[in-house]
Image (cartoon, rainbow, N blue to C red; front, top):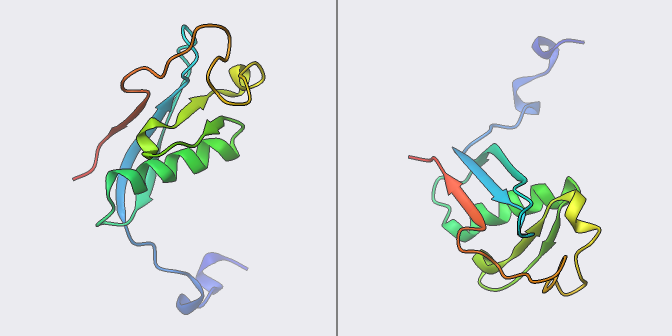
Length: 108
């Protein structure tokens, strides 16, 4: 079976606006970051786009400590996640969430 053999009704329409979204590890001195392209709803707001990328990196082994507002959430790369505290307040010593820990670029 090839793609041409699949009825058009069986292939869901992909709707959305492409955004390049990324996060950086909040462990001081780590420098690991992730950036990827995602389709998000055209009328999505910043917090919805952040949720998309945070959900994705969490599935990839990143540790996400969810906070409200979502922009205050902390992210740790897989290497640092093993050493972060359960509360996310002190992964390897003195930790504070740096400004811009969650970044986003792109979009219309």
